[in-house]
Length: 278
Image (spheres, rainbow, N blue to C red):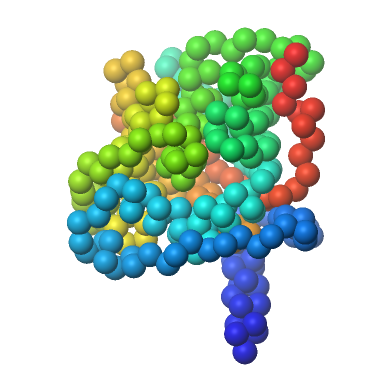
């Protein structure tokens, strides 16, 4: 009976995820080789106790990791997300008010931490097609087959998306970051834990973790006097891990980026040549 219930649960999750992300009908990828050892689940946290009593920053972060891994936590995330292929639509507004919009595709080969990660984003705008690659601790641009050094604003935005995104919290321990609980705060009736994450490069990001669901609903940071805020919407489970399908970035209260995921899959083969930088 328990096996039947589990099979039904994952069938429902798969159907709801496909509907929410608008994926085309296609065979579901196998997330990991069959020879892999199954992930060992994290101890189940007492969510109610953590929500209602004084909690430490580590308790909140570890509980969020547990939730994002659908009860498997860090081991499940590491096993399922060995590679990522994400496709979507994004709209950018620069400081001069110029709007660029178009499709993107991001390919990732997971590493022990974000500093060693290999990430490539291919952007296709109406007047520009180029790629950005994070590998060997730096960002490199590619136009057709020509490598170039992107300007500082492009590099900053790309790297902030890596280190000041959800992975900055979910992999704080692997990245060698420090945590601090900055209290609680209510916004529009929703109560949040405020978790400050400071990485080894002294980037400080504040994560707003829902006291009820332990999902990250928002994050904020500051750079060169500009205050940034990123909000996350439309969470769904994809291959047993939690993913927001929509995010919006604001700079000093003005929307500068709106990104929607059309499809995302984990565990597919990714060609390492994509991350070559010379």
